[in-house]
Length: 112
Length: 113
Image 1 (cartoon, rainbow over the protein chains, first blue to last red):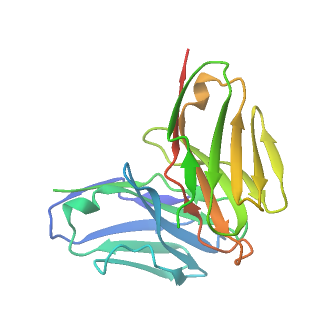
Image 2 (cartoon, one colour):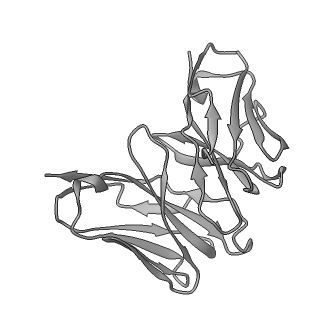
């Protein structure tokens, strides 16, 4: 397996624009997590899914953030409208129940 | 709630030892440890399950005291390759390994030759 695949690797966008981050988890993993990493807050858990169903989205900062998992092999994190304070590295991770989390390479988002 | 890690940063000479601590205000099912190099994704080191478990990985080992809701990561005879940011991740006691994995803010470890 190629591991967790995220796209794009880098995204630069203007304030107010919609941003969509994509993630393909490891095949067979039934848990998928979205994290945001900044110097100030470290690795923040935004939302996680089990068998494509959102379980806990209490970490999603605002209504501007939304996440979907339409099938077992694809998830998106959308920010609309984007703001400069959303600039961060966004990681997707997948795992089996009780197992280690495998992280994607991350998407570095810059909102100008 | 994020677990609390200490210290925030530590600078060592090659060959010295370090201890990184992780504590939670919630009952824990498991503790995960990861290391992240600059510009890369976090990489798994080990998982400890409740029950006072201890684990070892080369010269890196860890303990988990579920009563105190604390875990410690021990790095002995540190090598230059150990430099990076160490994160502990915790799962609450209710999920049986099926909760969201919440990470601390990390401990920055710098090893100097």
